[in-house]
Structure formats: structure tokens, C-alpha cells
Length: 139
Image 1 (cartoon, rainbow, N blue to C red):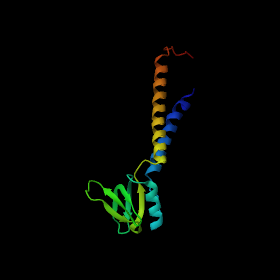
Image 2: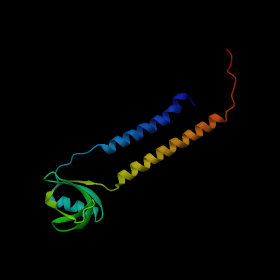
Image 3: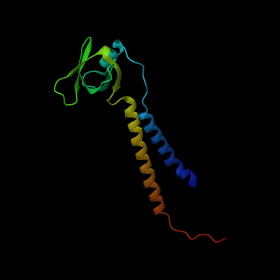
Image 4: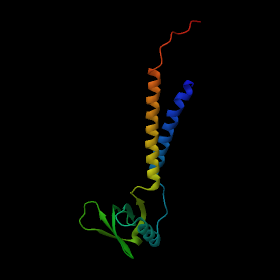
């Protein structure tokens, strides 16, 4: 095995991890939502799901869905004792704060890459320690 191929695997894993981290942090701009699409998304997420809501007046709310009604839904905001009722027509953007399938896949790939790199390092160090020292060859 040449010295270039030894360093290729950790560099490749590093490149994959950096690209996955950067791709997760990019925010995608979405067009404003209408009341029907907001209602269907809220119903799909379900009760006790965490999300961030941006209203048409610019206020952003983070919390847990408590109930879903015909014209509105209720969210528990932080440590507030009273739930906030939000009209579907007032919502301009939704952000899912829970674990989506994509987030789970990225986390598992990252954990696997770290475990694989650690195993490679342990095996590499072990094989170097068990090789006998040899005298350099004279020209």
C-alpha cells in the first residue's frame, strides 16, 4: 500500500463529513404558504410535534402542537402556561424541529464514518507497532 492511498481514506471521510454538515445548515427559501397547505402540513406532523412557525406579521414562534382545529391550531410555547392559538391563514412559513428521516440518515452516516475512521486508526497503529525494525539498505 502506498503512502498516498493510506491518506486517501481519512481525507475522503473528512470531505464527506464536511459536505454533510454544510448541506444541513443551508436554509432553503420557500414561497409563502396558503391556509390549506398549512393545515395539511400541521395535520401530517401531528400532535406533540415540535415546530417553528413564522407568522405574516414577522413573529416567529417555537413550540409543540397541542391541538388541530378547522381554522387554527394550538401550540405550547416554551414554558408559557397558556397555549397560543394560531390561525392557518396567518402562517407564512413552517420549519420542522423534530428528527426527520434525512436528519437521522446524516447522523447515522456521521457516526459510522467516525467509527470507521477510529477502527482504521486502531488497526493501522497496531500493525505499525508489531512490525520489527529493519536496518536500512545500503546503496
